[in-house]
Amino acid sequence: MLDVGTLLIVICITAFLLGVGWFVIWSTQRKLRGLRTFGTTWVLFSFGVAMLTLRDVISPLFSVILANYLINLGHVLMADGIARFLNQPRRLWIGGTILLITAIFWPLALYYAPENVAIRIAMAGLLLSIIFAFMAHCFWQERTLPLPLRWGMVILLCSHGIFLAIRGPVALIVNHSAEMMTSKDLLQGLFFLETLITMIFLFVGLVAMVAARLTGDIQDRNRALILEVQQRRSLQEDLSGAFANERMLRQEQQYFMHMVSHEFRTPLAVIDRAAEMIGVLVPNRSGDLAPRITSIRDAVRRLVILIDTFLSMGRLDHGAMRLESMESSEVLADIRQHFAEAESGGRILLDAPEPQALKIDGDRTMLRTIIVNLVDNALKYSSPDEPVRLTMSETAEQVHILVQDSGIGIPRREIASIGSRFFRASNTGAVPGTGLGLYTARRLTELHDGVLSVDSEIGKGTRIRISLPKRQALPVGTQDGGLKERRHDSMHT
Image 1 (tube, rainbow, N blue to C red):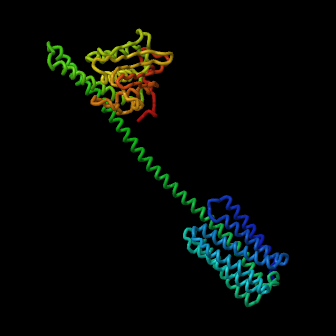
Image 2 (image 1 turned 30 degrees about the horizontal axis):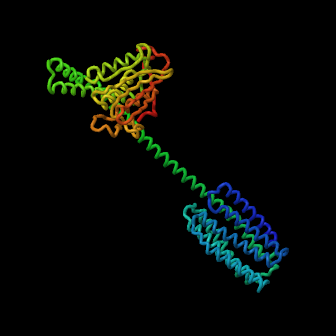
Image 3 (image 1 turned 135 degrees about the horizontal axis):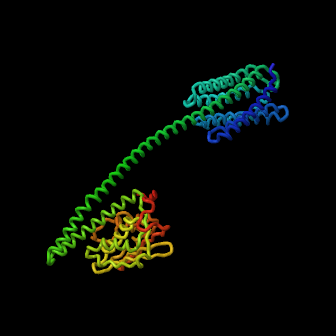
């Protein structure tokens, strides 16, 4: 014979341990919904069973009411936890109705028929079978769990629900008494043994359900990672193609620059020389001839400056410069020769220390492009009779090149934008220009680790200062070990 009291104690201890186990699982997988509810369910169920075992110690009225309410509350929470975990509709009205019936029926049953245990067993079986039917329905509706696990849980829950539903009529037929709840009654022993076995299998099934969900999440993450890797590979291939196209475009640009340098300079030199010869051969340059010759030579000079600017930008993007030490007299001679043949050459006032007194370290071609662009801008935006002053000076650590004019000036609010690509001040009007002269000067200055600063006022002229650092002694007029590569990736556009 099965001892009902012993089985109740075993069920109480087992349920409590299962509840503790669920709390441990929940502490490691807090992101999963419903796990804490499972732990609460088993703990409440264990307390309810404990009240049944203590019915002879505590007031039967209090212990029976509290025991059935805790047991039914635990089962309602179990059903709600399963619905939440499986993302199924929770149907809280079912659980609320069962708890309301429990709170009303048991006090009334104990008050009017305290010795009629059978009717209470029948009602408990009916209510619990409804809860287990709802849990089985949740698993029936679920499609993400493995099929064997889903069918196994449906069969387990339905079997226990049917057993509970049958137990009620059997209890009414046999007419259980209160003493039979703690005796060696065979039917009660079989019922509690089946409950213990169902508890264990239910725990195993729910753990398997959690494991299946975690496995599915891992598989989903793996698929997402595989998709992301494929997308990154596709992007890498696209970037490689884009880099290859950019490399090809750069090569074409460099080819175009070399073509401009070799093919455009010669005809421009011929045009300039022809205009000069016309001025020499024609004895009296009266009327419109002299201005036309001047316009031709001035246009040629501007084209040469524009070509030098584009060639310097090409070298800048290539990221290489040739460092050498130059005397200020050499630099001024280059500038003087560049503007000597133009009628505006006489407007340039050169101011520098005595020869051999000031040395500039840098790339000769780039420095020439910087100064020519600055001086040309000053001439272009000044009156024809206004001079442009080019001054060179030095401090202990820097060499300063100042280009100063008395022209139209730059609006204060636009000074910060000076040196941006294709930017021209709003007051330049119809004066021709591309907005690349100061941009190239600024970029080439930065390539020398220097600073270009602008100070201007409307109607009072503009002062542009180039500050270049002094470097360690370099051989005068020679390259320091050949070509020095200086990479400025952050300056690339």
